[in-house]
Length: 91
Image (cartoon, rainbow, N blue to C red; front, side, top):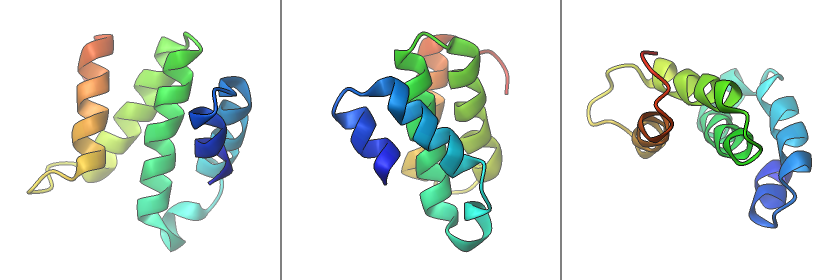
């Protein structure tokens, strides 16, 4: 995914742009796992730009979609860890 590549190479602002577009499309029904990973990466990208509310919203989206799945998937655990580190508050 282009947004993740931009994030990994340090082009964070471009990453936010691509990941926002990816998470705003109808990707979720056809590729739910890719959509959730994109949400997680969007949270990380927004966190790196200092956009705490945006990062918290992205992490909350991942957590809300996974809900109380057992066992908790890695994307949900990572989102929860980042939300806790940012002190996002209740989802």
